[in-house]
Length: 138
Image (cartoon, rainbow, N blue to C red; front, side, top):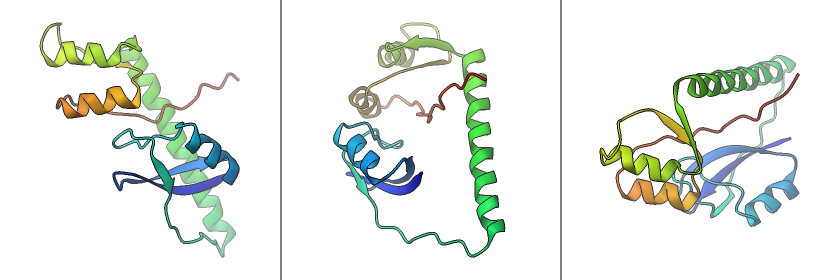
């Protein structure tokens, strides 16, 4: 796995993991890589310095940090699923109804395209985007 710094056309820099350089290029060309800040899919690899760890302890600590981050994301997903209404692909429409007080206010989650997310931002509708971890059946 390779960790890249990625920059979007709005100059937001974020990190993303890829199997290899070809995987990044394939996903970028198919608009599968979206900026978590603004949702645009016009992205490139950002300039970054190589991360060369001189100590095994640092490498182990980095692995622990990544594992802790994944645990946090799984807990966040569990909390959201238990406490919010799933609205699926109707997220943008339902968020608008809540924002305009056409329906009772409640916490929701679902999916939105990058274009729908950008429209919500332009309308001043606040929402968050979470890097949803995949489910793993044990």
